[in-house]
Amino acid sequence: MNYSEMMVAFVTLVRKEIRRFMRIWVQTLVPPAITMTLYFVIFGAIIGSRIGDMGGFTYMEFVVPGLIMMSVINNSYSNVVSSFFGAKFNNSIEELLVSPTPSFVILSGYVFGGVARGLCVGAIVTLMSTFFTDLNIQHVGITVLTVILTSIMFSLAGFINAVFANSFDDINIIPTFVLTPLIYLGGVFYSVSLLPDFWAGVSKINPMLYMVNTFRFGIIGVSDIDYRLALGMIVFFIILIGGVAYYLLETGRRIRT
Amino acid sequence: MSEPAAISIRGLAKKYSNGFEALKGIDLEVKSGDFFALLGPNGAGKSTTIGIISSLVNKTSGSVSVFGIDIDRDFPKAKREVGIVPQEFNFNIFEKPIDILINQAGYYGMPRAEAIKNAEVYLKELGLWEKRHMPSRTLSGGMKRRLMIARALIHKPRLLILDEPTAGVDIELRRSMWKFIQQINQQGTTIILTTHYLEEAEQLCKNIAIINHGEIVENTDMKSLLRRLKKEVFVLDSINVLPADIIVKGHHVTRLDDHSLEIEVDKGQSLNNIFALLADSGVQIGSMRTRANRLEELFVELLNGSQEAKA
Image 1 (cartoon, rainbow over the protein chains, first blue to last red):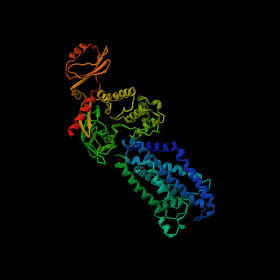
Image 2: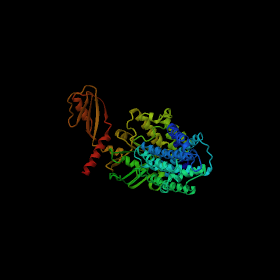
Image 3: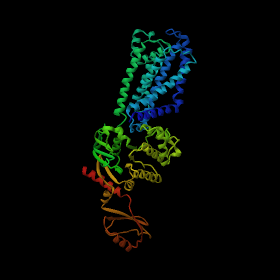
């Protein structure tokens, strides 16, 4: 396939992926908006007003970046895992496998679809947050870069989950038992500086901490960790997870027989 | 220089992870422009062979070339030449037929405008144009099969592989489907067909391979194969009611109903004697025809032969 043909294949796949989640917008775009609005109301407005400042910011200002990031992570991941596993389940993945589309184009197409949904949901949640607090983004470049890189990383992770999944139950195991606890313990609702030294140290092996804090640094300008280290770690994980995903697709493990 | 074979397979073997040997080093060649039947019982290795050609199954050893392109050297290029109609429905039932076709063309790098034009051509030719905006889950079984044929042809492959394409399709649709496939074969597309309807293979295909237990037990042209039949079976229709016990000396006769009977005749034997004997019994023959499923008899014979050889 030459470059322009690869671009046609990529655009076709991305268009299909975006149309898929837009077609079922009630299932894909509305629930995170409602859930995050409830978080804003409960943790920000009702409970948050009694918590007081955190790192010099109101609790609502502190918690909003983490909640936006949480919705981006969940939606990027679930878009790719459900779409690719669905294609495996109904065998429509064969449409792509029998074609000359290279593995990296297939992977990029699915990842781009996941990023599109992650950003779409992120934008909706951001818009909802403006009803509860004023967002004065301090570092636009870091904010955008972090959200895109994080979305890529979790789209890739969703792809790997889909490759190994044998049933629809399997695509919920990782989000329920791994992603959610890591996100909740990754500094979305609190600053790790509040934890005893031991637990603050333990928190630093949680990759979510770096993403949430870098994004928070982009928006409100404060972070528990160095954003450069965090960005470096995200890029490292993208290369690692992306490499595994590409290897699985190229060799056809658990995809071809 | 002669045109390379549409498919050239040498020593193709496939052993699945559970130890099952689906293919045991088969050799097979399908000429360009052929209408080729690949027959065999369930689990013989037909779908595995097709799966390897289409890249859905990884081979264990051997080589496969499509129009001279070795799949180990340039699989993407070889894939361009092949269109696959699988046995099972393998499209997203929530998508519309028009989108399924346009997307498939896109995966082959075909620009969208051209893909839309081609999709219109094939949807119209296969009688799906009116249904193009319906979710494909609402299509009938026959329509879904035709949708898969249209999808397989959208990138204009030189080789079309049909794996049991008429399973569950009614007679009228089956006929129109074959008319269309014969038409594209006449235009130069090579066709490889697997089917359980052996009379279809007999009527449509020029060459044939029979596969059993992962081995090719026969690979020849249809005429030569049918010539091997030692006996022929004719169906005779009588004008008057047939006697209850009808005997024709030297022949095996089966009374089918009051007005028709089946009679086995050795190849090359004169039929005059049979007519004379029937006339003596008071039977007046109005018409006669050859029983259509001659291939079926050979098929069973060959498979039994290969099993006995193993035993």
